[in-house]
Length: 315
Image 1 (cartoon, rainbow, N blue to C red):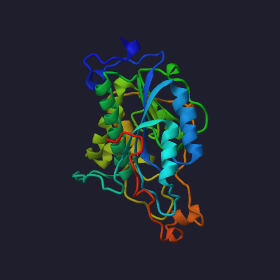
Image 2: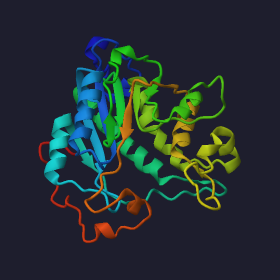
Image 3: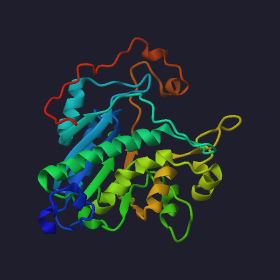
């Protein structure tokens, strides 16, 4: 019965066909990405109050994160991180190694790709694996799987899950210029805002597990230019002299994967958040970090060497 979310054969595989219940849905929240500003009370309080509690009363929280910080940014103590995890109700926490290189790509003629895509999708896959383990262990299917970043400040309460369509995934609208690419009948391009997604369970494996395979996609630059908005192939952030070589941006990698797997998406302006990557140390300015002048962080060492398991399960 859908009301009880029972997996037909007690395995996560059957949940890949689970029809999402519109009433009192069971939700898995995946907080994945670098920790950054998550231990800031304003950030983790907004995640709990405006995202987790607003979306559904029935939920479980899974976290996959890394503890790397750009030079000059504030680091938080173990106690501060523990308080943040406890406040959002984290039940499963995995800390992945920092600064490890993505797998090598053997693609002659293909453009380079952003390492951020592999880091993001690797953490998301690990989190979805934890979700599937929970389903196998309990014989229960989630109705929704949400992916959000730990460093997102949620500005307003999100809509309740019962208000969302269950045949498409929903994203936020931090980048309004990506909205046209959700209309497949009007464009042959694919690009999606990749910082947040709310995914009906039957679409979640394609969106959150299989997307990592795009790291090894070997299409030529010409093929990417036909499938992706050009500003996501030719660096949209570069304003200096000359121009870096073309690359395959994360937003297009994910959007192209979803489109080819027939997973539709829609932007929803009710999911309002801001990514807060920056939490500078005293004496550091944002401009000094961006310019690569990191003298303000001399002598700083990580405060996480004594990280303990606390009250959370680790995978």
